[in-house]
Each structure stands twice: as C-alpha cells, then as structure tokens.
Amino acid sequence: MTTAIETTSGAPEQPGALPTVACCAPLARTPLSLAEAQGLAGVLKAVAEPARLRLISLVAAHEGGEACVCDLTEPLGLSQPTVSHHLRTLVDAGLLHREKRGVWAYYSLVPGALDEIARVLTTTTQS
Amino acid sequence: MTTAIETTSGAPEQPGALPTVACCAPLARTPLSLAEAQGLAGVLKAVAEPARLRLISLVAAHEGGEACVCDLTEPLGLSQPTVSHHLRTLVDAGLLHREKRGVWAYYSLVPGALDEIARVLTTTTQS
DNA sequence: ACCAGACATCGACAGGCGTCAATATCTCGT
DNA sequence: ACGAGATATTGACGCCTGTCGATGTCTGGT
Image (tube, rainbow over all chains, first blue to last red; front, side, top):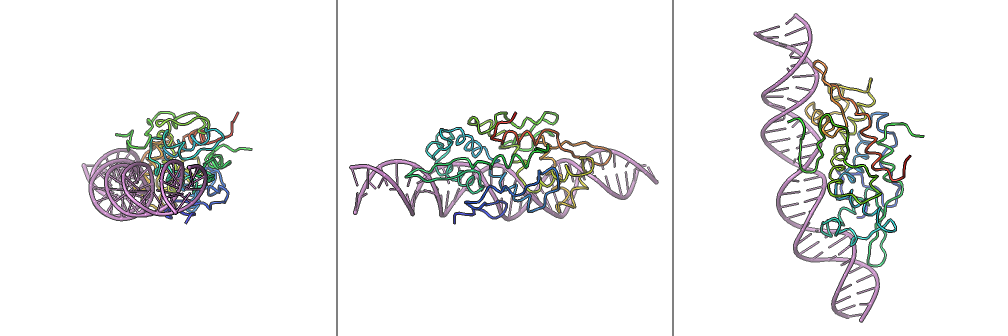
C-alpha cells in the first residue's frame, strides 16, 4: 500500500528504487514511445505543480537539506493534510526521500533525481 | 484571443516573447515564491503530458527539425483536433514555434526553451 | 495507562484537462 | 467562383487532481 497512488497516467516508482525517471534518451534525439512518454510524464507531473515546486525548493534550502512537515505547512499556506499529500506524491515519484525520526518525518531531496529529469530535457549534447 | 488559453494555473507566454520559463534561480537554491512557482509550473504542466512529450520528440527528430500536423497525427494515434490542441498548448507555453506556409502549419522547437527548463531543475552548479 | 502532538489517511467537493465529433476557417488549384 | 484539403475552433463528456475537515495512527513523555 506504499507503492502506488494512481495507475492511470502516473509513474509510481518503487520506494527504494533509483529515480529511473523513465527513459534515458535526451528526448529530442529519438521519438518517444508511448510507454516512455507516460513514464517521463508521470515524474514531470509530480514536479509541475506550484505547491510541490515550492516544497522542493523549501526542502532543498532548509538547514541540513531536510525538513519536516511542520516546517513546511506555514510557509506554504496550505493545510497539513494537503502538504502531506504533496510530499507523498513527490516521494512516490522518486524525487524526495522520507525518514521517520521519532514523531517527525524528515524529507530530503533524492540526490540525482532532479538532475536526471534535467538531463532528459536538455537538447544540447553533454559530455 | 491568440495569447492565453487558461488563466488559473497556466503561464500563457506572449506569442513572440522569449521562453521566460518563469524565474531564473536554480530551484534548489532559494525557496520559490508563489508567483515564481506558478510560472514555472505552468511551463512544466505543458511538458508533463505523454502526448505532448511525444510531439516534442517527434518534431525535434523530424527532417529539418520541423513537422506539420499531418506528420504528427498518425504516429500519435490521436485525432487531428486533439493534436492541434496539444500543439497550441506547447506554442502558448513558449516551447514550440508555429509557422504557417501555404496550407500547412510547421512546428519547430524554440531553440533554448527546453534547456532553460532543464537549467532551472538542475541542482548542481553549472559554469 | 493516559495524554499530547506530529503525521497520514479518508471522504467529499469543485475545478481543470484530455479526448472526440462536428463544424468553421483558410489556402491553393482549377 | 468553386471545391478540396489542411488546420483551428467549439461543445460536450468523463476522468483526474488539489483542497479541506474529520479522523485514524503512531511516538514520546508523565
């Protein structure tokens, strides 16, 4: 019950798996297959939301590179259930890491995840 | 009537304007403001859709770096109005360029647009 | 054992969006 | 001027999703 949230257009990553993003080709090189496009779109949909973008930047900029829900609720101006929901979406997409310590749940960026998305979107060939 | 499609969460770029994407900070550096997040999310929402991702890759990989609607309808397996709708979304987001030549409408990638998105998402500092 | 507090889940609601058929518009030949 | 063909627009339908309040679950202290 911790793996998938939706089945239609999302790409629920395995909890412990690497941020696969979906494919590896730089997007502008070869026409994407339907499956590749669906996988990549699933991760992008997780990012393409104002509240979640702010959550990512808040977590990244927070002290120690991690933050708990109580740190994020107020600056976002959203209710605690809504923030938890967005965080879950980001974790399921493989973008955030969740670690429970005591009563608090600390969220941090999965190291290469965002850069992997950036790499796929980049059109210029990189080393 | 040719500028904006929706007003709620989208970021309808000006037709001839540069692909502003929204902001300039690398996302993981400083917490995004609501306005910055909304602007960036608007462009990302345009990309975070399987059909539109395939359209982008099809256009980019097509001969001459451009393609008309008739080239894209069949490989996508979607109706012509749906393809036109997606293309319009990508043009409004500043990702595709549209040029009408005779009866055909040729779509091509806006040079730096995708890379601009990739730059904002990248966490590692680049030169 | 009980309570307080942090977080997750549930149920419901409204708005957004992808899709299509039908139709309109526009351009080029004839 | 007319018709054919390419593309855009409209209207409708159903699914997806962001949001909240209410509630459940778990942990740590007293």
